[in-house]
Image (cartoon, rainbow, N blue to C red):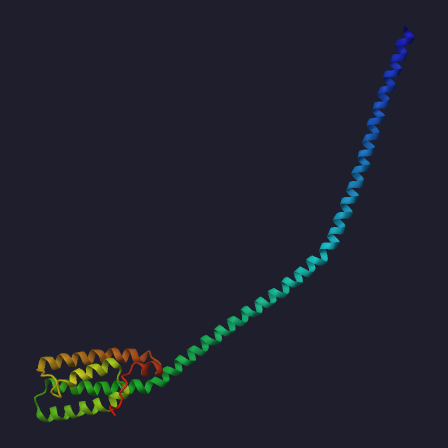
Length: 211
């Protein structure tokens, strides 16, 4: 009986030892597999890194090249814009300088025509009226054509109707036409000061021969 119990204990210890050995071997196997997996992962990562480095380097070089082109084009656009702005300023200054004589002539002739109209509307002195009439028509048919804008030309025509018999105008109507003439002259002077010569000529009445 005692011998049987001893044999059972020996068998149990043998089984336990075998189980422990099996577990140890499995742990060893697992460790080896993990080591192999790490080695393969390291090699894969290293290979991938070695493969990607040239690609990334090339992409960076291409990106740098296009960025350089973009920066160059942007700088060229800024330079062209600055040059155009400078050219526009210089052209505007040249236009203003060119228009100075026209503005001065416009002012002188407007004042002469307005003064004549004022005399014609208010004076009863035959000599002054005759002089003013001659001056008004001389300006109307001559110098004013060079400097008057369309609005002033129209106002001169309306005042002239009071002189040539087209309309019968009393003192009040003549003064109304004179004030109208002064108003459009003031607007014309202000507009001309901001115009180029081309714009100024476009704003003038174009007279043509009847033949």
